[in-house]
Image (tube, rainbow, N blue to C red; front, side, top):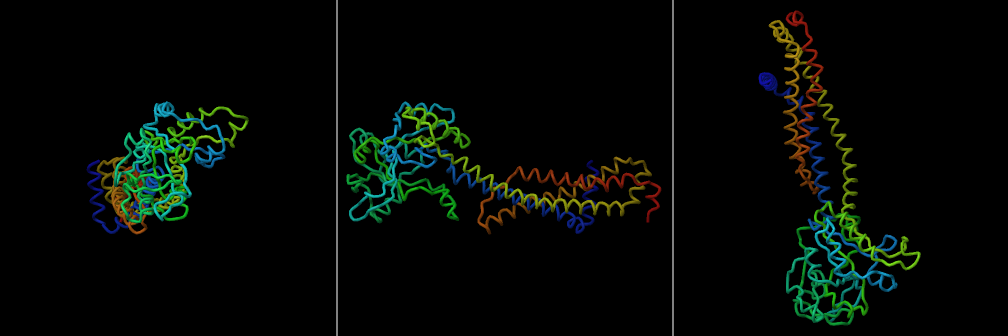
Length: 425
């Protein structure tokens, strides 16, 4: 085998240009496949990161009706039988094997009533919760402080703003210790937070915006849940946010929390179990990500099949050059057989040469594919993630092509009659 490999390299390097042109089809095919697979993998990773979040593994379980989200204010206003979520319910959710942490909170969209001096804001998402809500969503404190125990025990009217609300409402002024009005009630700003900027979804179209930001407000304000009643004058149903232990557990965690919460509803008529009833529904962002990934992959698989055609063309080129090689080395084959070389020896020599030829082409194709991937990433501004699995498969596949398409020339060489071969001119 070692001698066959040595002879293969000797034959390849003695006809450098011919060998390179023979490998060209293999190189182009392997490079194209690696570039496509790397682009698919990079795009899929970005889709998952954009929808699922930067490792946060967060699932929101919100009130919904007929498949559409219902704010807790609307649910209360309709007099629905929305159950109370207490700490025991949260503990029950956290006992699920897929759940790392669960947090209850109030949320509504404040279309008006947010004022500071002459400035006002509309469409702000008002949250009633605590530091656990800020922590689970990976907000960073950039100014001021978080809530303290006395804010809750003393029913203090304090508020934490996100950076977008702070900029819009205060116009560059330091908001800390300033008083704003929420629905006519004064609240003191104690902190400003911002999302961890390691996660930035790429938004290129209206569809992307709807996917990542559709339904979101122009910013958030968080007040202690003990102050919620003072703003809305009645108990609002809680909603729940769940952090799964792993990204793959998100669907299971959301569904488990959804089932626990919906089991709390008390029957209140024939509509209770119908689609028209208000119930808790988890936002399955992981399934959204998988659906988009399947769509991207199915489209790109067609490109892989097209790129594979060049491998077939390259294989035909290998077969052609090996047939030429057999013809050129007919006297050599006849001499070896006359000296006692068996058929399998001749067969092995030519199969090894074909495999080495395509393997070298495969390795060059891998390098070209990696370079092409980064070139596409830079020019087209699309993410890439080099697939080492695709690299290994490509090299093995190129060797298999050498064996398959080198088989006919090798059989022809091994079946030559030594007397006829020695007479060949």
